[in-house]
Image (cartoon, rainbow, N blue to C red; front, side):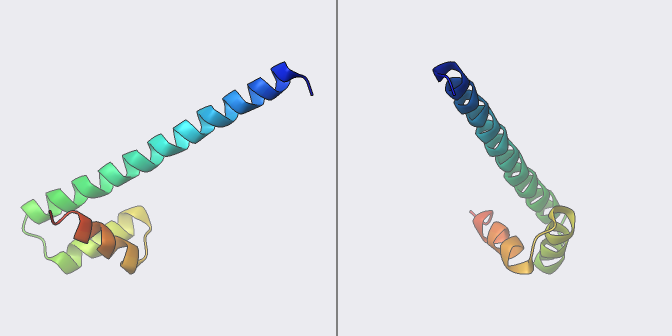
Length: 72
């Protein structure tokens, strides 16, 4: 493997890591927006949790953590 090949591989890996980070941030923003919107509509916390689980394919524990984080 040449230095150029190694540099290309490292660059591609960096781009992929950046894309993955962006996807994760976008997902978290989407969850926060859903939680906020449902709360503003007066939806119960139980139903907010259920909707977050359903729409983002999360376990109940993970969904509840997002709800706790968005309380502030």
